Length: 137
Image (cartoon, rainbow, N blue to C red):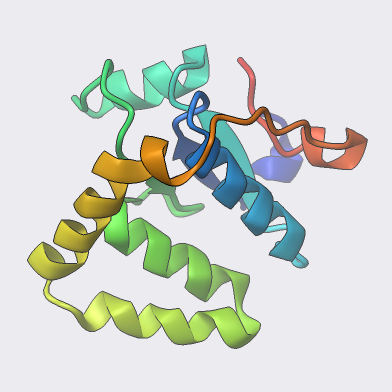
């Protein structure tokens, strides 16, 4: 990663999941302040992120957000913070962080378990500008 990306937040996602790819595209389209980079958990950089933190490296059912300050959030807390960082109307979803973590993550887990049924597998092809926001190391 070059120096221009040091203040970015990295969304780690399941690169083989159509549902996850839909949400990556959704974030990309709303990231007007250029706050995010994206990385598949299956990539070398994604695997290093997981290994360095002692996280599961073969199950990709969890979304991670590595914030620009080095902290990382998982599951529902990551979702709520992404909405907050997008700003505008989406920042209202930050209120979800007030839910007990067990409730927020419980809902996240229900969606995660059913994500392959929710969305057909589809290949998201980012345009040339969007490609710059993906880490493929």
